[in-house]
Image 1 (cartoon, helix red, strand yellow):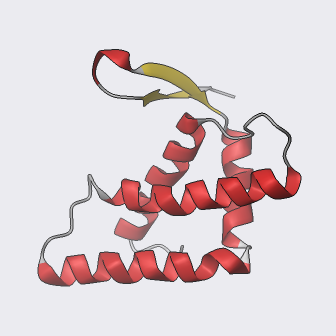
Image 2 (cartoon, helix red, strand yellow):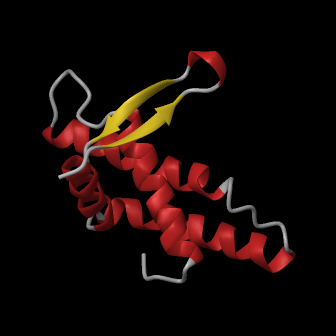
Length: 110
């Protein structure tokens, strides 16, 4: 299985972190199946629909919006199953947010 990496940070202070595909899938399943996170997901979708209708939708900024939902899911997962150290690294969460944004853009059911 190929390891993917993701750039984290900006400018000269960035670093490349590996994306844990198994953890990414675990987090995706968790946030999709946690009812407390559903209203936030619906709000994100409504927000993106409004931006599309107004012609202000920016596909470069969409992953950042999804990242809020992924971060909240990661925090809840950490509280429920975690230890003191983070379970999901930044690259894994960002990769999932980008995947969700692409799914939304292509009209896939998310």
